[in-house]
Length: 125
Image (cartoon, rainbow, N blue to C red; front, side, top):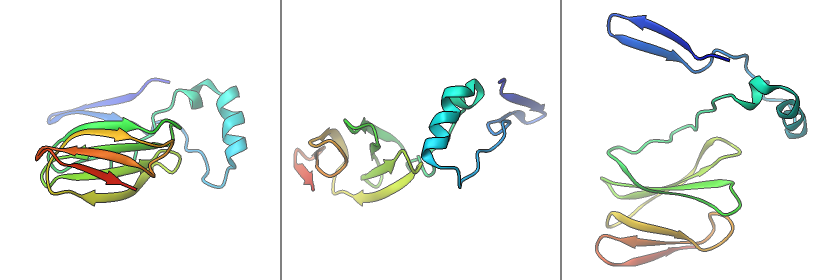
């Protein structure tokens, strides 16, 4: 499938939803079977809701089980956790200083360490 591009005076518009939508009521097993059979479904672009920071993201880490994405952002310093199977934000936590590094301590988002710019280490559990 080719991404649909429209040119206007103000610039280009990229259509990310030019393919047919998959019904929400379709079971996970049916979606997996569809992915095996349909190459267009396998190569689709899926957008993660609310994947943004007001200014910038400094660190992005995926959990070892591949189900969660943890993102550290600036101004005001915060951590956001996204559940990839639901394609949405799970929680947001504001911090006292900017994130220098993130280390996931478990298989999922349940435990992780945050190194702050003020040289503190915060444990999220």
